[in-house]
Image (cartoon, rainbow, N blue to C red; front, side, top):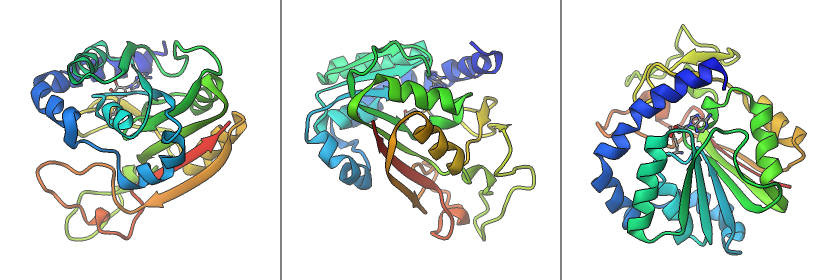
Length: 249
Ligand SMILES: C[S@@+](CC[C@H](N)C(=O)[O-])C[C@H]1O[C@@H](n2cnc3c(N)ncnc32)[C@H](O)[C@@H]1O
């Protein structure tokens, strides 16, 4: 494992205690109220209607996995390199009775056979932790069966530039859209190194890996807002904050 990836893993294992501390709350959400975003359900509708087998790269707390099952997935395999995270997600899935299994492993090079998966699902704070975007795309393409889909719902690569000012949007003086990486300075990934992949680099990696692009949409609404109700002006509708990508093999 790359040294910076190892450092990030330690940060995530520490951050994952949140998923253990909030176990009961997350369990309640897994039982019912947690859903995929409406646009995800629309874009994934045809895929989910065929009862796909899903691999979730960087599955985190796993709430999207029980939501995927409720939306039609036959099974979900979550891959996350945090042992603490994977164990908490597994315990929750068992309690909820969802056909989700979790493996603590690194992405890319996931422990999944070639060409056996209908859908690779990922995002919501995942792609920024990939050290090598081409290796990530190749691994997704490798595990997909012919006709299988890759779906990403993720923070827009311009997001690291926005300040959290509430009066008007501003660009951080210490960030560049074209920088290779920066150190995360907000919870829960505080201290970890985030890699920056432009939309161009992302799409190029996906198509180079042999996948055909079906959808690339950009959204003003971020995929996540803090619980304290703060409202950055950068989220008011004028700037890109998220994107969805759907591709197939
Ligand atoms: C911000 S969380 C988001 C995960 C998920 N989308 C969610 O909403 O819970 C990022 C996750 O990626 C995992 N992660 C980061 N880099 C990884 C890697 N190289 N291999 C496997 N997991 C990784 C972390 O352990 C963490 O659980």
